[in-house]
Length: 53
Image 1 (cartoon, rainbow, N blue to C red):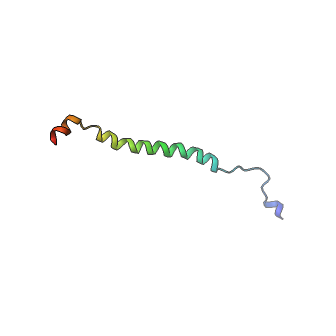
Image 2 (cartoon, one colour):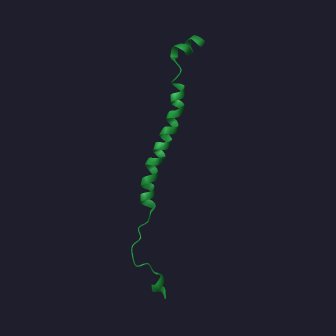
């Protein structure tokens, strides 16, 4: 009876491909999220900020 439910083909784990796919995706999303505030801050000109102070 046990041989009826034992898989006869090798099924590789999906952890490695998933990890290899998720790491670049997370790094790309983190970079894009970090660029947005930087672009908003860099719109200000230094001369304008110094004159206002």
